Amino acid sequence: MSIKKAIFPVAGLGTRFLPATKAQPKEMMPVVDKPLIQYAVEEAYAAGVREMIFVTGRHKRPIEDHFDMTFELEVALENANKTELLNVVRSVKPKDMECIYVRQAQALGLGHAVLCGQRLIGNEPFAVLLADDLMMGEPPVLAQMVEQYKEWRASILAVQEVPAEHTRRYGIVAGNLVNERVMDVSKIVEKPSPETAPSRWGVAGRYILTPGVFHEIAAQPRGVGGEIQLTDGIAALLRREKVFAYRYEGRRYDCGSKEGFLEANVELALKHPELGDSFRAYLQNLEL
Ligand code: G1P
Image (cartoon, rainbow, N blue to C red; front, side, top):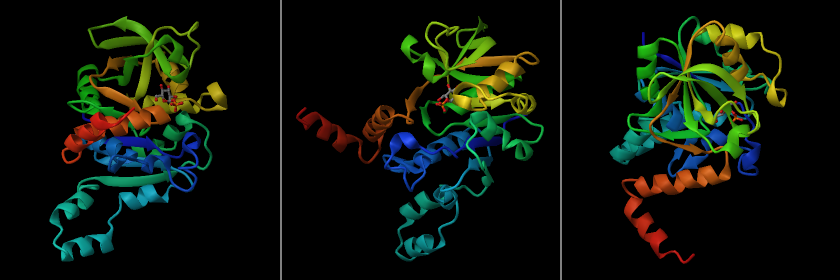
């Protein structure tokens, strides 16, 4: 069975990017020429996901508009014979992709956001993608994880090694390596201090989860930061099911931070087919 559905938690307030996010969702901030959320949706689509479930909140209308048809724009581009641009606009939502929106009325945490998608997911494995984490991989990171899911038939968490001083930013896993890239997880802790962290394997914002996790999240009290944590739900799931951590191949940009967001913009601009060469020349001539 492949992974057909994904949850995108997009109800967060984006306070780290104020004032840019005062009237605009942080997920709509562009990296070069595409909003962050579109990168995550394209990654899911490339991994075979066709049902995109957005867990939204107030002020998130622009995300719905982005994945809707823009009739006036399409007619204008068609009349002007701007075929390339028309294709760019139309490719945002391929015909076989479905977008569904569910509201998270209160920001009670990532675990709670995922729980809001329970009815739409039903009893099948699903993906969770955090758009803040912009992932670049070949094949795309979620596609790599789907391959792992096919092999292990269990929940798969994307992980990377993080510096000791950054363990407080991540869910941290520990366990036994079953091969170079895969760990049989025995422990997961949300945002531990460097002293208490069980390892330096930090969870990046990509998950494939079995539906059993819903039941576990629902039973969790509030955790770190007073929030219902997805990590705590996964920790409970571990007692019943196998969970694997997968060291993905690729690069993660932490677009939840200004530094990561700027790095993503610079590096993706350098790789951009139209802008790359001139942008490189510009940077080389920049007097620093
Ligand atoms: C969330 C998760 C954390 C994970 C991280 C990845 O934290 O709670 O376990 O490691 O995403 O980006 P947040 O960054 O939302 O605080």
